[in-house]
Length: 174
Image (cartoon, rainbow, N blue to C red; front, side):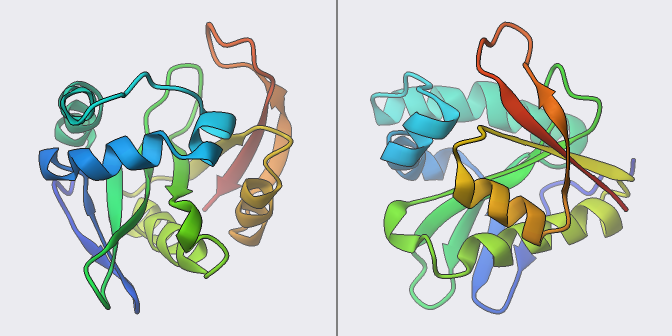
């Protein structure tokens, strides 16, 4: 796996850059959005300070170690932070996990597909990964549709370590 540290990506409508401490207010909003809490879970981030600690302790160390992590998705037209996507080294998964979440008002506009397609491309071409995994709850139909549109295939149901929720595990081989 080749390391390409702190790389920013670009699509027709989006900038996709590593999440930094300056994104703390956005992370606070995103992590407390209804779908995040329902489908991803409560990370107990209640203040901007909590968000900064999360970024410092969870996001930045993986970026330093692997060259990839969570990315903030920014709309080019107005510089608005609309979502996040990224590549995650999760305990309990054999491959790197691709994940995504967008603020409610930016769903159903093609941004998630655009951003995750670029991160999928980067996983293969920039970071030289051979496979990707993706996990989601079965009832998260928007997520399962997007994963299938991206070419992921359902592998099986499983549980992450210390997590009682049954998840769908998707896989993509490059």
